[in-house]
Length: 74
Image (cartoon, rainbow, N blue to C red):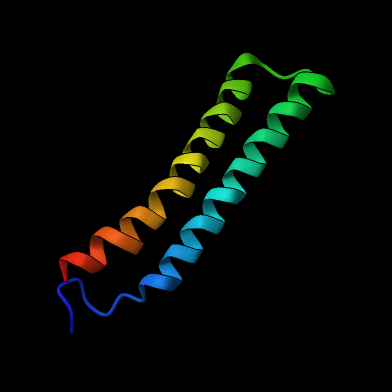
């Protein structure tokens, strides 16, 4: 057993990347629809932007963290 338990790193990386892509997709599509087709308050547009940003961070950082850093520390 490793230092962090029995983590399946490839599976965690795949799930993190897919989760990040899903958040980016929801944020970008929601922002596009909110700006062009539906009238929404400014805080909702900001929320879509934040969701897209968090999705981008999850998409970029999950392979680095779970694919490179954590396996090297075991």
